[in-house]
Image (tube, rainbow, N blue to C red):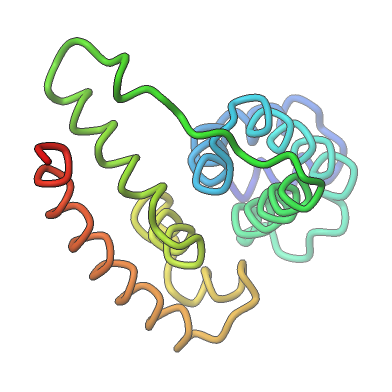
Length: 171
């Protein structure tokens, strides 16, 4: 990936396209942790790709490309939220008919969406994207110990909410 970043910095469009193609799933997951509306997610990702293309020359170290790209995406998601384009709740749970795995995934996402944003984004970056605690601190511009405590609290909150989920549905 480092070679692709170096080529993209030299305005190699094909290298840039391949970089974005490799990261698009990760970009979606992060945007989804902030926004529920598919149109807003698409807008945030599109703005991120444009910003990245225009500013890739300013990236100092190629090894931090994914961290840098994620920071741009988070800023764009926050801009969308600030502009009043609030996310809309998904009603997928009522529509899912099929495999229990799909239902479990939907329940998992509902619980994740119900978490406080400060915990949700850290859980997504840590477990979903595989970032290290130090990288998350850098991306979110937080202290390492803050990230550690939010990760711990987020895990506990998620576990508590996920274990309660079936009982809430029965009642």
